[in-house]
Length: 433
Image (cartoon, rainbow, N blue to C red; front, side, top):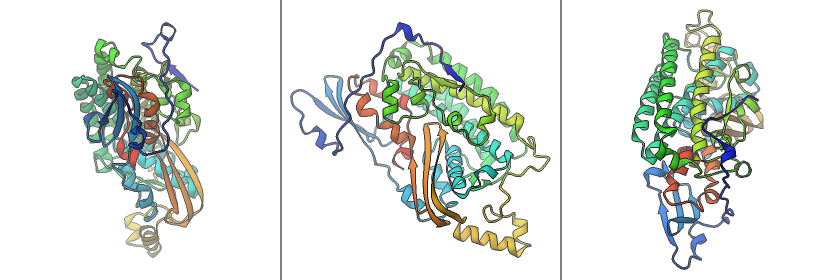
């Protein structure tokens, strides 16, 4: 596996021990704080707080300004997505995946569609053009999510200028999404067995122009932050997660790689056309907030590298002059063209069945995990046949990543919580589901 150790680090010159406390007992958050004595103070951070990036509540026990206990209290945004999925067809659930990590809706769509396609046994039948377009969508989503994560992280620590820089580039990604999918925020672009539509005319050139511009923006952001004295003091040696602790708590994505574990789903178990693409897996050496920042900066550069390869190799070229298909050739899985629906009874029947009853998935159970910006987004589907899942479980990386807070926060100062939460980069819409 190609890995890349990040610069700006000298592990030999620094000895840092991870601050690990015992995991809390499975009782209510308030019950765990009944035994408080002495001068300790209990502080509620959230659920309405700008630095919690959503409705996250952390009950913090303080001894002076030092944290002695931290209990995350989740569920304020719970919408029952997994139960909703059991009451609608596989295709009808696609828009709900947009609302998980709503900073990367395109990537959520792809991960869910691949899980259903694995259940149906058509994941190996996807046309090459469809696979390349899906990879482009996933990497654009990764850049978009990291740009916002970086901008919000920097703003929390006090660097407002970086937030303005990153949002300028995200606006360009939204323009690309709008041109491709018809929507800027909730895209619902992927379909079971393919895509809703092909690349529009001129989109290829717009994407290349954006890639050139975002590379300059990433370099500017690094100039503002990487050797900035305030930024370094607020992030280096803060929130250290050791390799062992990261693995024990099931961390994935940049938070795991920031601790020096070179695990990336795109490399470990490649899907789509990732096995044919060249990219490095950046890893940290210490596992602190600074390492997690560096990992995400380099991941954006690697995403730019991946998208350029896809644009160069995509079958059919920019305008698909050779009419390469973007859907599996199965009329019982993918909606037939509207022109055929209006002229053929068989096509009309297929459309009616797909829309009203959904795709006919076989009985069985599958799990598929994709490398999303926040980590491994997984879908477990239990099917008893038909067009609706019997059970559906979402492995939300934000939920898993936040589980480490009770072990990570104790021993830090209250002011460090903002830096640590920003470096973990979570979305409560995905966490609570």
